[in-house]
Length: 408
Image (spheres, rainbow, N blue to C red):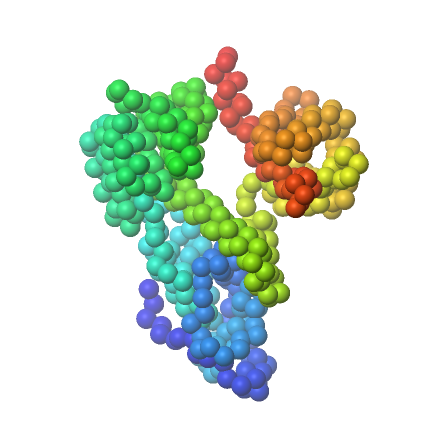
C-alpha cells in the first residue's frame, strides 16, 4: 500500500467550499470515478461517514465524486493529491477483482483505503465467512483447510458424511465444500439431507469430484448444489468459486436483513421521507444489479396480468425491454402459446396465494431453445387478495443440455 497519508476533514463553511469547487479540475479520470461510484453502490449499506457531525456535505458520492473531494479537502493541492491517489487505487482494485481467487485481503485493504479517502469506512469488521470442508481424503482436507485459512476464512472439516451433518448442527457454516465419492454416506446424500432441513437448506454447497461425467454434474445440480469443481482441482479455481458463492450468500443475507428492517419500520410508522428514499434507492441498486431476471406483474380486477416493471437482467435474458413491456398484458407482448402456458401458472399463483415454480422453453431459432426456470411469488393486500406477482427467472439451458446429453 502507498505511504500517502491524507485524511478527510469536515467541510468548511459554504463560501470556502464553493471557492474550491470552482478551482482547477482534479486529476481523476472518468473511468476511475465511474468504477469508484460502482464500488460505493455495492457497499453503501455497510458504510458510514467518518466526517465530523454537522459538516453538512451536500455532494452525492454516488454521482459526483469530484464534488465530494472538494468538500472534504479544502486545499486545492491536497484535493489533487487525493484524486491522484484514487486514480491509482481504482484500476488496482479492478485488476485484482478480475483475477481468479486468492486476493481477498488485498482487495479489502484497497477498499478500506478508497473509502477512507472519501470519508467513509465499514460499519464493522467484515467476516470473510465460515466454511466446512468435507472429504474422506486427509491430504485434500489438509490442503483445502490450510489454503482457506491462509485466505482469512474460518474453516472446519469433516472426514465423512455423518460427521459433516453433526458439524453443521453444531455450527451452521456459510459454505460447504463437499466431496461426492465417500463411503457409507456420499455427497449427494449429505446434500439431500441438508436441503430437506429448513435450518440448513439455504447453505450453498460446492461439490468436489474426480468425475468429469455429465450425469454426475447434472445430479449434483439436481440435488441442490450451487457449483461443481472437478479433481484434481486448481486451488486458484477453488478460491475463486468459494469467493463467488460467499459473495452471493452475503448479498442474500443483506437483502433479508434489509427486508426485515424495512417491514418493521413500515409496520411501526417510523420511517421518514428521507429514510424511505434511501431504502428505495438501496433496493433499486440491488434490483438493477442482480444477475437474475426479475419481472413485476400486477393482477387486474378483470383477471388479466400486466407488466409493471422488469430489471436490466430480464431484458438481457429475454430480449424484451422494460419500455416494451410496461403497462401491457401478457397477450400483448407474447405469443398465443406462451400466454396460454403462463396464464395457467399466474392463475395458480393468484388462486393458491403460494409460490409457483415452473420451467419453460422459449424458441431462439428453429433448432435452438432458451430454457428458463421461473419462481412466482404472490404479494397480497390487507384483504388477502393477490394484487401483484414478482417473478424471478434464471437460464437453465446449460443444465437442460447436460440432461439431454446424459439421456442420449
